[in-house]
Image 1 (cartoon, rainbow, N blue to C red):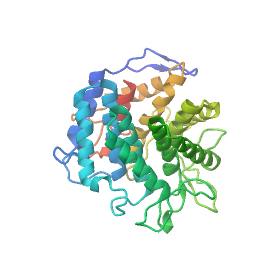
Image 2: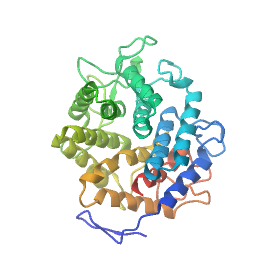
Image 3: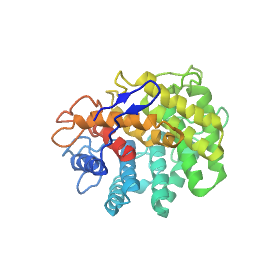
Image 4: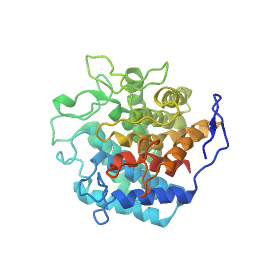
Length: 355
């Protein structure tokens, strides 16, 4: 059922899909894209082309959210299957393997997921992966000639260790702040909180428009900020700011998070207030990442405007499922027969956290 969006942020005639619908959406997604024996996600249904390494962590997040929502042992078993499949495919999460891992943010997305997996299961193997992965990014490895992503002199995180990767991108800075906060949350090691505050402070100064909540894509030393906006950067800005607020009670963080979310709603969403999408390589995953972080604001939103806004997105996508039960990143469109896993993830991820 569609419902009316009012200018005050209120909705009428609200109707949510059921928990069974959320389960079904995830099951259909996995039927199409999760390899039945390798337990790793493929780009296309029934293909042997493995999806990008960093996006595998986001699909694992979806399974985690299903388990958090249901506490169903089947979803816990799904989490373990996905972990085992990726463990085998990616050299046992050996962070020093510079052929498997070739950019900092690929590692950091996994660090975030491992920290969440530990929080949900208390399984020490997940915490060990997260701690080692974070240290690998922060301090570097003898395998390559750099001292890590963090710039102790000027602040911020470099995107990669190669000479042409030395820009400081939102996609490594805000995820690093998220990961540090999750590790602080789970270990009580204050050094992680200190790192999160350092990175967030640099990001706020260099990548965040404090007037309207826009997040810039990157800044190369000696150049001005590139203000190209991407939904996943808005997402991790929201996540890092909200986590910092939860642990410090500094109201600036919460104000930043809301301003960032409002920028998506008011400036990036279309006339129907549907989430934006792009057609570049792997960019269909961005809304699934947004689904991971916007719910952190729900408990600070008395009107439930954010939740109802995203429910409206789900309702539209649900109307356009195909005969496989898949949905597209363009919620107004039925997926093509050769839809990519990235594009099909958006509404499924939203269903796991909005239901």
